[in-house]
Image 1 (cartoon, rainbow, N blue to C red):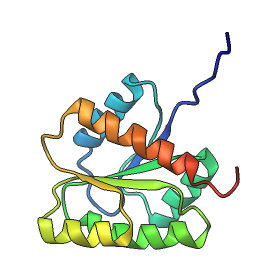
Image 2: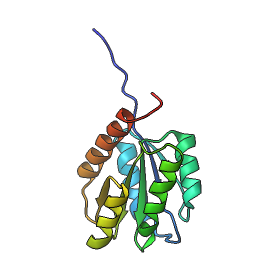
Image 3: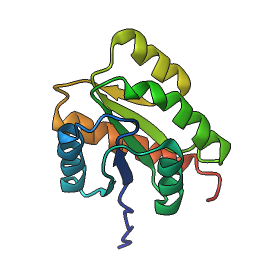
Length: 142
C-alpha cells in the first residue's frame, strides 16, 4: 500500500486599502482553517507591496481579498504586482460587496473568483481548494 501525503492549501486572507471591516474575512478564514487549509490572516489596511511580499514569504497558493467598500478596485494593481515578481500562479479571489460591472473588471484583470454575500461555506471551501490545486499545477518553480 502506498501512502501519499497531501499538502494543505496555503491561503493568505487580507484586506487592502482603507476598509477596516473584517468580520467576513475572519469568518472565511475560519472556514478554510476548519477545512484543513493553512491560513495566514493579516490585519486590515494592507498595502499591495506588503501583500505581495507576504505571499512570496509564505509561499501561498491563494490570496483572498475582502472588500466591503471600493477597495476591491485596487485588486487589478495587486494582480499586476504579482505578475511583476513571477507570482502569477497564485490565484486571487475577492469576497464582499462587488457590483456586477466591477466584478467584470476584476475577472478581466485575472481574479479567479468573486464571492458575494451569502456564499455558503462548502462552496467557498470547494472553490478555494480547486484554485489551490490549479496554482500548484501552474508553478514555475516546481
